[in-house]
Image (cartoon, rainbow, N blue to C red; front, side, top):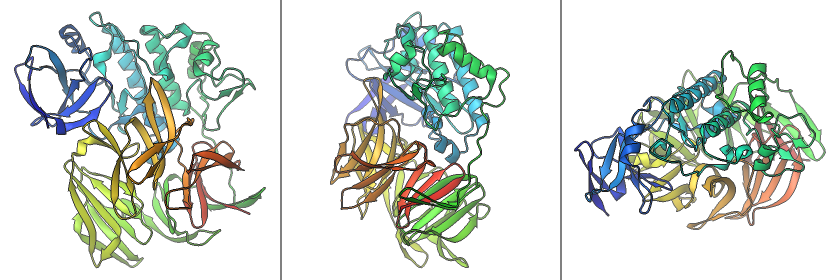
Length: 565
């Protein structure tokens, strides 16, 4: 294990160990700094052009409330710049791409007002950079971090174009301005900003959807064919949320239909879109599908269904269900959020959380406090079937929900580097430049190497969908874990779906993937589409789960049970 001491341009010395790496990108590694928990270092890979002193001096002008800027240059002892220190963005931040998802916003209480606040700070950031004679360049949804308080941090600032540094021209395809040749300039920042804002407000990229003739996003940009163009040639996804504010919509029309480039403004905008009312359904038979309403007209936050149990979280309550019987779901009881903060279900048991304490449900009149474990205030929790992973700064607890005796629950403590985990978009870890994902092997939690630049992940047992960057393009693909190896499909998906998984053998089964007006059935043996069920209630953003009762679908303010006739 290499341990190297670096000297900063301010005379400070930092000893950095390979084991303290918490993230790795195309240019370098992000390392912890011993004794400075609020800061990290970026160390460049060999062969990468490092930041210059002139660029460093110029970037220090940026507003630190909006930009993560280099604080100290680090020398390798031979007079060469090896990297720099910067402020550590806390683990409560997540990529801007997360709030493009309606379900993520619902689960994390991201309101439209908060989206407007975040969008305004993005606009301010671009305006500030340009006023400082800086071009951002790759202003994409992964280079902007936000939190649920509306704070915004722009990262990778050392790549910005300034009078001292030319931008590399490497951009994510989603935000490259193909109408004007894809060149990096102030106008390309305006275009990239508009794409992020449109995506933020509508859940959809302005040039997504399917066009009969122009299949590539770049061609759609050049031909000025945005998703809101009223033409039968564009198939618009149901998740697209139209912008009702006429002033704001006119600005997007100027950008995408007329080819104008300017700094977006939210002046006079109070509400982005109207609210669609859901159509109530009790029980219907549609072709070969029986649809039964489980709950409706509720402000639903999230759902979680296992084979035997179900949990629906609303803004006020947790509702627990029995799902052991084919064709119907039985409500067991309701718990108020005034009494407990979180509920976790396994195949056999139910756990309640209140502050840092965990409780075991015996009956509605008997709830027992677990005395041999508490949840650290700074930790986060990921659920893998019957095992909870509680991850704090330096320790991970594996909590076996089905193994409880009296007021003791079996758990295992493992020392970890907590800052090497990301969890808002699925649990992943970077260790020594290797990205790892986790799954429940049936007895314990196992981590598996998945050497991709992972941005988001959805997972059920040993199968899932992973989003990663490859050659400046976003890839969404199925994966499965077999033994100690992972396999990624060859087919690109439109997005990361909240799918249901029905196992049929030890390692294979069937994925139920939500689509507009249908559910696609994909076998995990070779990730081939084998069937489609028509269901007009479903959109691409519906959340599907599998249980013994059938397929559970959450859409809007209702949850349904789906079964074949």
